[in-house]
Length: 48
Image 1: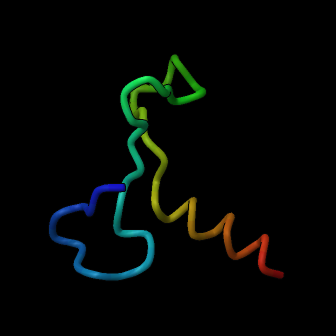
Image 2: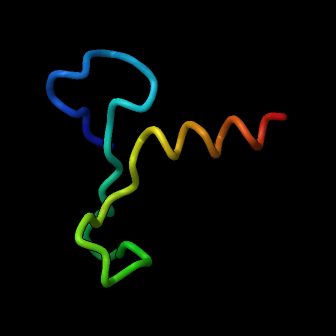
């Protein structure tokens, strides 16, 4: 995952980009990365 410049060190302030050899599941999406905020929200759901 890569930090998003200007957002500082806080939850969700990053993007997770697939490494070479892997791919983002939605091939028609214009943004081919996982949003850190969504990742954090889904993780929180798992912990409940």
